[in-house]
Image (cartoon, rainbow, N blue to C red; front, side, top):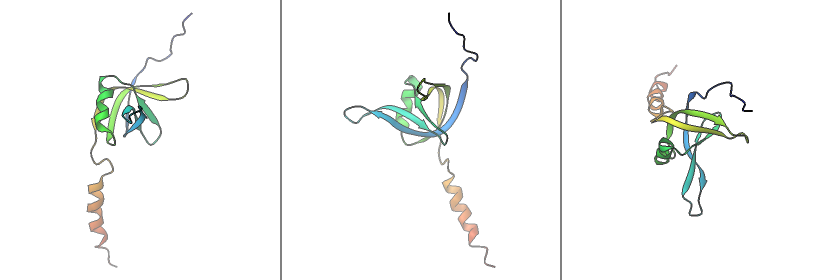
Length: 105
């Protein structure tokens, strides 16, 4: 008898950093993860997942189906992604520093 899952998988969006997860014997990256503030998500190697290898050490917004393995590993099957630029707002911090000099009480 098969047990039906109570909820069909749904897409979720995460924002994180593309990091290497596994290497082969020649130090080639063979698996990647998306590292977020809360967790790491191993990227399943479908077509879009493989494209993320081009964006190692980049910030990305990834949408996909997330599932937990029996060992607790989180995996994401990518359905779409966007490479983000200046997520931390580095340029805005520079502008803010200009205002610090005006307060000379």
